[in-house]
Image (cartoon, rainbow, N blue to C red; front, side):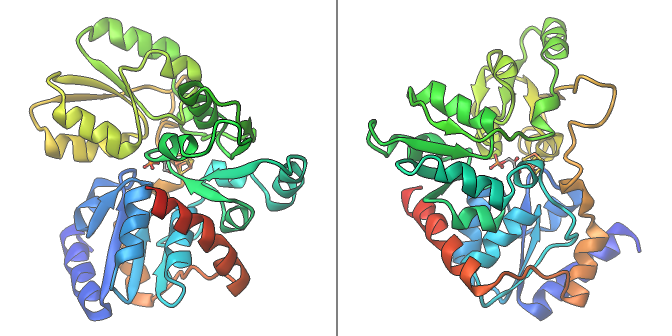
Length: 308
Ligand code: 13P
Ligand code: SF4
C-alpha cells in the first residue's frame, strides 16, 4: 500500500477503535506525523495517564508501552513490534538487580523509566531524563540513593546534584557510540553550531555540549535559541520535529565512531507505518502483564507523575 493510503486506513481504524497513537521522537517521521501525541518519555507517560481512549497504540519501545499498560490496566495497549526492546532494559535483569539492590538496604531506588516493568516493581520512584534532576534533588542530601540502569545518566546526575548515588552498570547502545573525535571535527567545520546532547551520552561527549537535556528539552532549546546551526547528539529521529518547527535552521546529526548507522536506535526503528496499521487492524501485538506486576510497578510511576 502507498504510505498515504496506509495513513488514511490508520485514521479510519483509530476512529473505529477509539484509539490514541502515542509516538516517541525517535520514530520514523511518517509515524510521528500520524500520531495524536509526539513527545519524550515523560510526556508520553503523562498522555497515557490522561487518555480516555479505549485502545493505546504505542509507537515506541517495549518499556514505554508497558508503562502505558501499567497506567491503564483495563485498556488494550498495542506495540507495533513486540521485539522493539532497549539495551538499557535488557542489561538490567530482575534477579541480578534484586541481588544488587539488596546489598544497599538503606538506599532508595530511583529507576530510569528505560527499564522493564519487573525492575519498576523493585523501585521507589521512576524518573525520566526530563525530571530526573528535580526528583533526585527532592530527597534530603543525607538520604542514600541507588540509580539504575543508566550509568551515564546517573553519573551526569551525580555531577549536577553533588550526590553520590550508587549506579547500576548499564548504558544505551545508541548514545554510547557517539564519537567525541568526530564531534570535535564537526564543530571545527561548523564553529557557530551549538552542540545539543542527551544525558545518556558519555561524559567525554557531554563535556562538549552547549545544552544537555531530554529529547523535548533539546527540541525546545533549538526552537528558542537564536543560533541557526546545531549538532544534534541524540537519535536523529528528533530532527524530523526540529526541521518542522524551524525549517530555516540547520540540524546536523552527530556521527558514531564506526562507519555505520548505529546512532539510529534499531529497536525504535523496528516499528513501521505498515506495522502500526496491522496492529490496529488485528488488535495485536498486545502488551500483557500479570496483576501483581501491574500493582507493584504502578506505585513508583505514580510517584514520578506526582513529583513532575
Ligand atoms: P527521552 O525522550 O525521555 O529524552 O528519552 C530518550 C530515550 O532514549 C528514549 O528511549
Ligand atoms: Fe533504549 Fe537507547 Fe533505543 Fe532509547 S535510544 S530505546 S535508551 S536503546
